[in-house]
Every structure is written in C-alpha cells, then in structure tokens.
Image 1 (cartoon, protein in one colour):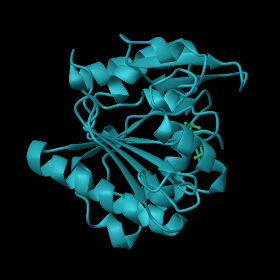
Image 2 (cartoon, helix red, strand yellow):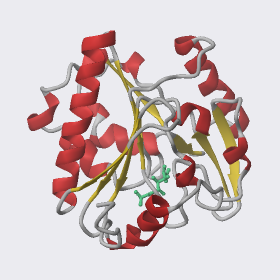
Image 3 (cartoon, helix red, strand yellow):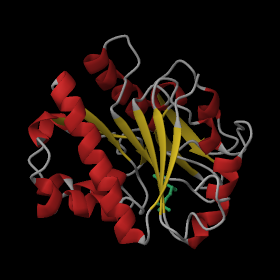
Image 4 (tube, helix red, strand yellow):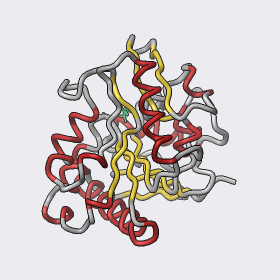
Length: 248
Ligand code: 6PG
C-alpha cells in the first residue's frame, strides 16, 4: 500500500525553497535523532539550486548536524564532476562546499566512467553501506521534466522496468545521451520522497501526474509511490496553477 500523498503550495520560488529547506531539516534531524544518521538523495536539474543555496546559508546551515548527514545522488549525467552539466558539480558549488559534511559522506555517481562501470560502482557503494537490503533513504529529492521523467527515469527507457538493480545506466534517445539513475525499487523504498517543481512551464505536467488515476510508464513520475513512506509535492503557485482545489 503506497504511503500518503501531500501537496504543498508555497507562494513564489523563494517561498518554495524555504519550505523545502524546513522540511529537509526536519526529516534529517528526526532521522539523526532516531538512527544516528540522515540520508538525503539530492536531485539534479536546476530547480533544486535555490534549495541548495538556502540550505547552505546561515539561516539553515547551523540547524543541521552535517557530520551525521550522508548525501547521495538520484541521477547523473555522463560527464566529469567539474563539467557544467554535472549534477554533483552544481550541488558541490551551491551546497556541499559550504557545509561541514564529511567527504566520506558524499556519495558521488562517477559520471566520468563508462556508463555500466559507473552504475555498477555506485550500486557496490550502496551495497557496502546497506548490505543486501535495498537502501531506505530518509529523503529522496526529485524534479520532474515536462515529459514526466524524474531522476533519469525517462519514458520508454529500460530503467523503468528494472526491479533488481539499484542503479541503472540508461541510454535516453531523446537526449542522445547516457544517464545514471537510481531505480524504482530504491526510490520507492524511501521514508520520504519530495518532488520539487516551480514555474508555469511545469503546471501542465504536475497536473497530469498528480491527477493521474493509475501509474503509467508514459509518465514515469506516476511510478513514484513510496510503499512505506510519504510522498510530498512541493510546488510554487505557478507550478500548482492547474491543480483542482481538492488537490492543492
Ligand atoms: C536531471 C534531473 C532531472 C530533473 C528534471 C527537472 O539530471 O536533469 O535529475 O530529472 O530533475 O529534468 O529539471 P529542472 O529542475 O532543470 O527543470
């Protein structure tokens, strides 16, 4: 049985970022109090940039026990960490280099490797930490593309059907590029999944996904249902503009 769905509509992009930081701080602090560590999977793309900047700012920086936080990545492009397209590179620039998270707690997908090697290496790193149990992250941050992709789970790709491997290397025809991505068994095992979407361009896809009656591979974000966790949509008013009042 999938966990509960919550939709949070929070003013403009700055209000959204602040609300997301409040929630991230709460879920990670609760995890650290209960289990000694907090595990956060960072999203790629541009939407989380504001969240990372705010999380690294004095108003939030001191509120988290960063030495007890582990940072992971939901997906990565096949580029080196210093490449402008690197999800790790953006997170490092905006967040990681500004907070005292131990280097050994930053679990980077090595996009500079051949795709399959990078996927196998990341899966092995997860297995070294979580052993044979699928990782149960405290929070997985996700963005959403206008085609309904999330992480690098794109419509029509093989990664959508992966139920054993925790990490997939996937060729995305639309991008003519390889990507690395956590797979659904891992994302859906999280204690909390947090979608972040802002701006009017996302309003249509947000409505399609949240209002979707049944999960469909045509809209990969509809396949995200943490079985034993919470699903949160954090939206600014523009991204939420097409939601019916009952969902807002
Ligand atoms: C990536 C992401 C991807 C992203 C969406 C939204 O590596 O690009 O993981 O799933 O979250 O494409 O991207 P924006 O936030 O830039 O709109």
